[in-house]
Amino acid sequence: MIYLQAMTANFYSTQAAISKDAIVDLSVKASADANPNKIVAVEGAALDDLGNLIVPEAIKWASQEIAANGLNTSYCPSIGLAGLADLILEETLGKLTLTKLKQQGVNHAGLVCSGGTNALSVPLAACASSEDRIIVQTPHWSGYDSIALALGHQPLLNFEFINESGNFNLEGLKETIDNAIKLSPKSKRLVIILNTPYDNPLAKEIKRSEWTELIKHLSETNKHRELTIILDTAYMDFGPGGKDYTRLNFLVELFESLEDRFNLVLATTLSKSFAMYGARIAASILLSKNKDIASKWTDIAGGIIRGTYSSASRPGQELALNILKDPVKLANIHQYQKNTVELVQKRQEHLFKLLNKIDFISDVQNDANTPLKYIRPDGVFFTGIRIEDQNLAQMLYTAMLADHIYVPIISNKYLRLPVCAMTEEFSEELLKRLTKTCHTCLAQR
Image 1 (cartoon, one colour):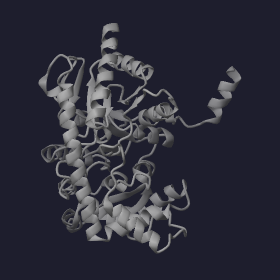
Image 2 (cartoon, helix red, strand yellow):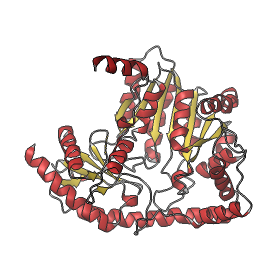
Image 3 (cartoon, rainbow, N blue to C red):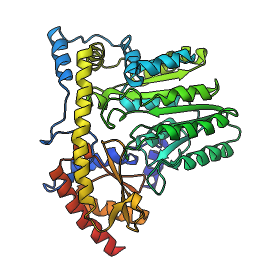
Image 4 (cartoon, helix red, strand yellow):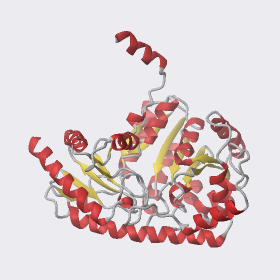
């Protein structure tokens, strides 16, 4: 047995594992559970009140048009169909913000990726060496850790995304940036991953006034070393009102204030914005004032993708192109986003009413002395509940599994509720069972 363990450790040189991804690991456990009374709240996909995936009509229209003309099964370039990355960039930034950036001398180059995960792994492979420190918010989507481990990076440096009052923790990020420089004084580059607007798992955002203050600090940092921000915008279209092309206009101020040694990679995905979860369409787009860096992006980043697969899936990309080129279909997508936000906002308000009736949970902004505190989100896909004691968090996770309750605990202390997929009836049943399990854990603590 000892020999076998040593041989296995020698054979598997990567530290990455599915079990280190809280979402994927829990999904695997839930799928393997045959108990008829299991309750699962894991996947972050918008479902209607019948439990069906909400699909925009534009997806159906485009699918029918493509099928009617005969499905094209020829090879698709590994960097994506011509023009698609640029259309995704325009849909992400909006024409006005994109025009202002061009006027500032900001260049861009992008390539199509296989979903948001691929759009994030590409810049982490291309823009950060094993010596560079990478900062990420906590709580965060555990895929960041999986990617970093798979690529052989150092453990990520974490900063608490929200403070005790549930607001963006600007001071915490500034302190972590300064500490990263002290930890690696010889490194020439600092990489920061930010999941905003509307992060996973809290659905919070960095507001414009907070960006202004953060930019001042980043400007000082940029004087001493190269700075790369990887901006994960997976849920940006599910804020109040749905689609809003002004949500990333802080990038104009960002590029106005930082030097040429600043680069930003936009990891943007249509998987969620267009409800094309299985199509896995995303883009990894470099924005830089340095023309030489931008000119090399498609080649270098494309080479990383080529090391994973030789040809991307064409049908999903043709679907995306069909919609992005058609104003009527795109308007239908925007209406879907607006309708989904309104639906989930109603679910959120019902959820808050239920949470306010539970004796051991309070709103984080109320400053009450409860063991669990919920965080009111800025977006709609998720609602997070912070568990103040990490020992209690571990007890609760173990007890939930024993009770066939599948809700992920992110970063060892945040329950993530995918409200986008939870009907009001489901929320009532879930909280009823969670309350019973929590009471048992609190009594044993």
